[in-house]
Length: 261
Image (tube, rainbow, N blue to C red; front, side, top):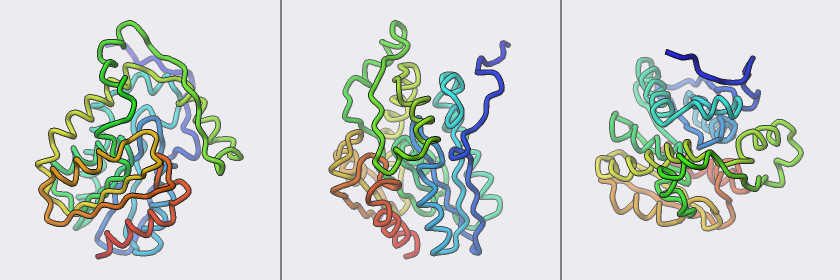
């Protein structure tokens, strides 16, 4: 067995470190970040949940994320899903109820996890069971001929003054890596297949201004899952990272209301 090739002396960006926020109830909330993202995306939401309703919040860092692109290129869908499964099982050992939330690919992983385990409530934010870039379906073939292509980095105005955010974006978002995109698409296909198995109370949040995930993703989830209680909210102004963007306060309020009722 050969060792994994990653940069020498790899380190985790400080903003990408896992977050564990202890609460005062027997409920834990597991929040999963997105593809090429980090726990930073979920930190505002996690702190609001912890501060306002007192639940323990855990935001894991998915393998290959928040370190460097060499590490990322050596990770795959099995690594990402295993991390979520392990996180759930560790929390379940100590808490009576587990609520699960995910952003983008995190929402995809949350769907697959909720189909496998007894999740008490499910929050899906911009869940990437579909994406607007149709080229993703060709990634399984193209990855054998093209390793990556360059892409434009889009930073929100509030992020342009944060040096570490810029550094993480340059590390992870300046190029699209076809092998990892292929892994993402396989998860998307699996999540769509698992939707009829979802019976837990579910909140779906999407945005008309999301340039990554189309509104049909939320519609598909609402029309396919078997939950008795399904709530869906569509924002107008937010870009893809709804829970850490210009409407993050409203997003947090909606999630807290759902979890607390």
